Length: 339
Image: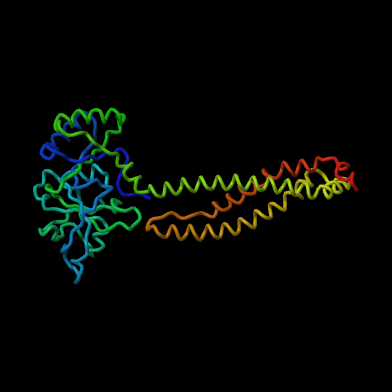
């Protein structure tokens, strides 16, 4: 699923100490040495934003809508370019426009909530102050990836900043960029550690439980396959021994090794087909119910089940073939001697 911003090559770190006042100098220096392409100050890491405001007002607001909480992000300049969030109307905050200090940018969900047909230039009340809408961006996932994107206001607010986002220069290696950034950071902020996190790794942590579930599913599936193959091997051995005289008689009457192998294997293939039908129905239902718990989710293709069926049959034949062929190769006289 597109998350609405580019998390690759993006790092974030808390803004501490003198960096509050020296951030722009730090940014310009980091760009000049080629360590980054842009940087921005933001209220929190984009993967963990939790701020929201109430009592927001906008033109044409319906009764009770002022009680709806709207998520918000406090930024200064360069945020949209640093995080590569797509602007679909209007523009980003600009340093050469002092009026942007009272401006906001809305996401598509906020525009929909506010019923704004032409949002650019509209006045709304946010943080108990009148603000002007200067831009609209595509929805982006910054909160829970399991829920629909919420209405969000991106507002220019210097006093609410606690984090820095840095877009690493793709022309250099990550190691080189980090080395340059660490030297520059300590130049402007010598008493605080350069404690950064990769945004893509932080975002991946949101799916930690799914990753653990996937690992467990693979482990138990492999264990089940191994146990099943051992069981099939044992059943094939038992069946071949129990039907030894029948196989010998068929062989005397002209049955080929391939025909005898097919005769012994087909009963196991029938069992696999029956178990596949039962398992596929249960799996389809459970997967469908599980996926419904996510607002944004993938589908599952019928070819997954087709591939599973053929793989199951192949494993079944692999497990029973040795016993079937061995039984077909036995000298008929050996089995019929007691008769």
